[in-house]
Length: 95
Image: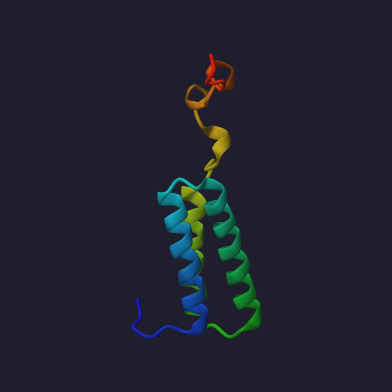
C-alpha cells in the first residue's frame, strides 16, 4: 500500500471499510449492498480514466476476493432452527 492515495482510492477504501464492518457484524444485506457499491464505484472510476491502471488492477483483485468470499452470503442460508417461533411466544402478559 502506498502512503499517499488519491481521492478515488480513499473513496473505495471507505466502501471496503464499511463492507468489512457489516460483514463482521453479520449485516449481510448491507454487506451485499457495499459490494455492489464497490463494484459500481470501481467501474465509474475505470471509465473516467482518472485512476491509474495499476490501481484499477489492485482494486479489481480486492473486489474479486470479496465476491468469492461472499458467494451465498445472505440471510436465506441461515439455519431455520434459529428462527423465532412467534406461535410459541407468550405475548400476552395477563395470562
